[in-house]
Amino acid sequence: MPTTVSEAFAAAGLSPGGSVPWGTKPALPERGVYIVSLTDSLDSLQGALPRAPLSPTAFEQWLSVCPELTVDGARPPLEQLIQRVAAFWLPDEVVLYVGLAESQSLSDRLGQYYQTPLGKRTPHAGGYFLKLLSNLHGLWVHYAASANPTHAESVIIGLFSSNVSDTAKRDLKDPVHPFPFANLEWPRGVRKVHGLRGATERRANQPKSTTRTKNHASRSGHTSPSRSLFDRAVTAIAPQGNYASCKAQRVTAKNLSRGQIRIPSTGVSSAKSLFPASRSAVRVVLRGSLLRASWDPRIGPDRERSGVLRVGAILRDLVGENEVLIVTERIDGAISID
DNA sequence: ACAGATGGCTTAGGGCTCGT
DNA sequence: ACGAGCCCTAAGCCATCTGT
Image (tube, rainbow, N blue to C red):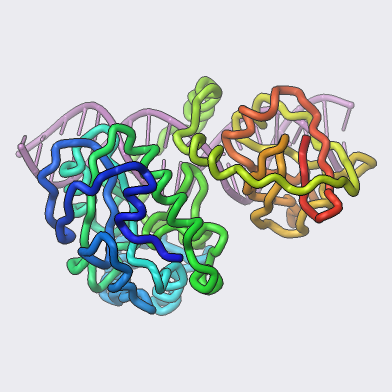
């Protein structure tokens, strides 16, 4: 069942603060969240469009300002690029993008969104799919003040994703991540598999990653802003009944910091055979919590490596350093890790 | 005050090196 | 040969800084 704007705000416990046409800054000096919609109505799903109203001219511009833009690793012809973006359109939804203003006013943040050209990283690189629409200037921006915009945004996208209809999901390029059309990431770090690379300009001075790695390690106690939502999403527990058990590799501090569990490929302790043969999203029950994880069997062109199961930052809450987890295939086919 | 530029945070993913 | 550890880059999104 598609989500209306008012349902989205209500889920986050917010009262709508107003609506403005795309390009108009709201007169609201507070922090909060905003929803870009096909309709000015808070309660209606009328305005939903069966196909994405994409602007070929915008795509041409995009290709010209992003010479390194590729689809699935290759420079695409115009038509292929348009088809790829269109494959993320949800025909029965009116909500196209959910954004937030955490440390500045909604007015300022929306101003940055409006003024960021396609292909530019700054000041607001997110949600750029919207700028490929031919009806961009017919869109509406609904906003609400919030004391905790990050949490509110997360709740709204979570609600939206869980409400996407099966028929809409069936036609999506990436049905595992049914976010609003222009939201490419939720929660932090989990992205739509759109196959686009080089969609925004490179940074002028990308810092060396040694510094980034050290910083990352020093932040190992960081709490992901999406954690609370993820916890709430983790509700269903798979039925009991075990089938086969194998050992995962020891969980190192590095593994914890990266939210990943390594699965050996060979030997008596091989648990890799319990997972899909190709890269995919999988559901696992980690210490009683049902999680959505990404699975990479790491079957390289030269040789096979340990598989990597990425569950995200929640791993640090559920598993300690140096633990050796037991991977079990339950009788119902679910994979549990304890 | 505003617009634009730069930086920070976080995760995904490819691939190299090292130890056993 | 294989498992394990790590380096490095890319990406998405928001915050902060800086110049006008």
